[in-house]
Image (cartoon, rainbow, N blue to C red; front, side):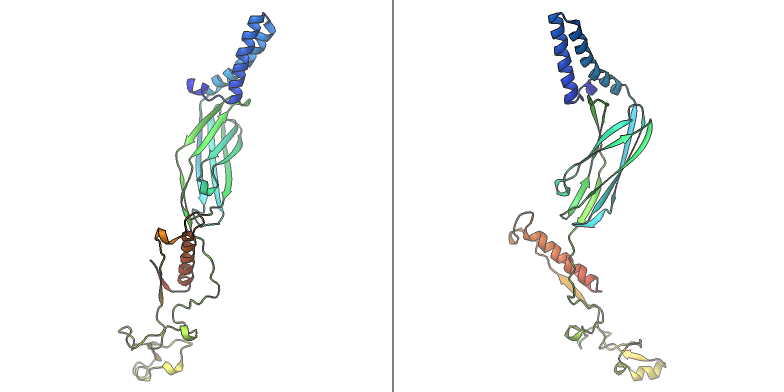
Length: 280
C-alpha cells in the first residue's frame, strides 16, 4: 500500500491537498457542505490507491527487431507484443521503450486493453544514423486508473541488441573485374615466376582462345586441353584503414566515420566482384 501511495500522480496529490484544505476550512467555518466536498476530493485518489493495491494482474512483453543487423540510415521495425491477465489490467497502458540518444531517444506511446485477458501488439520504426552496437530497452509499462490519480510503473529488464554497420556507397563503374578478367591493361596474368602449376593445362571450355590449345596434351588425352599460362588468376586486394585518433578530425561528423564508410564501400565493391579482400 505504501509503494502504491507513492505512485500518485501530480493530479492525485493535488486532489489530496485540495481535499484536506477544504475539509479543514469547512470544519473551521462550520460548513458541512465544504466538509463533504473535501471528503469527496480526498476519497477519489484514496479509492484509486486501494483498487490498484489489491488488484492482482500480470503483464508480459516481448520485443522483436527486424532486421537485427542493418547499414546506417536503414529503417528498422520494432515490434512489441504485450499481454496481460487478471484484475486491474484493463484500460490504457502507457509504454516507454528506452533507446540510446543515437537512435532518437526513448519512445513513448499508449495502448488500450480490454478484458481480464488481453493481447496487444505495438510497433514503431527507427532509423539509426551511426554505426555501432546498440541495446533496445528496457521497456517500462505504466498502469493507472481512469481518472489519472495513480501511475504504477513496471520495468522489464530484458534488452534486444541491434548492430548498425557502416554505410555502403555504390562505387558505380569503378573497375573490379575479379577472376580471369580481360579488361585491357587491368587483366591479371600469371608471370614466369608465378605458381608452381603455371605451366599446367586444363580442359577446354567454350569461349577459350583456340591459340591456347596445348596440342601435345590434347593428342595424348584425346580431349581438347588449353594452357593455363594466360589464365587470369584469382585476384586479391588489401584495404588499409588508419585508426589512429590523431590523424582524424574529431567530432560526430569527423573524418574517422567517413574513412570507415569509405573502407567498407571499397571492401564490399571488390568482394562483390569475386576478389579476395583483406581489411587491415
